[in-house]
Image 1 (tube, helix red, strand yellow):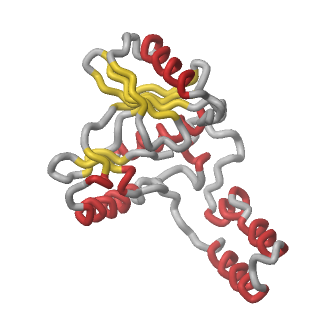
Image 2: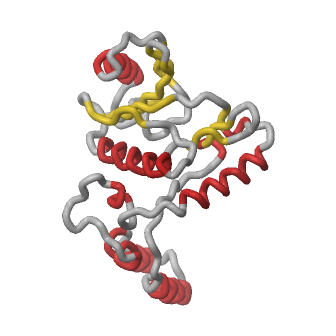
Length: 225
């Protein structure tokens, strides 16, 4: 199977080696594929005295996603959160992201996972204190297209997420009883009146997306995509 996005594992490894030479300007000492990447190829690359993570994807539109992810991670790092430093984002020709490889154990292997989950809750609360310029992924665009930013929560629900259209589609397909559809329409109308300031969200805070050190402290929050 050629994943992600029609790039074979052999081609992916060759591309990562190419990036090490052209972007990192070093002959790699070690190139090893890492598990856990469902939407991207993920490799550990050791060059000189550095250990780095390289994520790649053949889909051209992925470059914009990587740039948005970098922006979100930078906001979190600036707020003092444990987030790997993004060193490079680009395309040569395929989109790629290079970031520090944070040493430690994945949260699923933490000695005391209850303590880890407690820390995750505290970190999530801190993330939700970081203000953004708008709602949705376009809020993280460095130079958003005119008209793409929506500062209203209601405008985001209807203009970006098309909530009413999706609800109507579910009703047409018979997936909602009329009484439930009406209840959801009322709920949606009420939600559109909310006045909320946009803040940063991680969106996938779980044990597999955190790294803990030998003392059980979270030292990195991963996968901001």
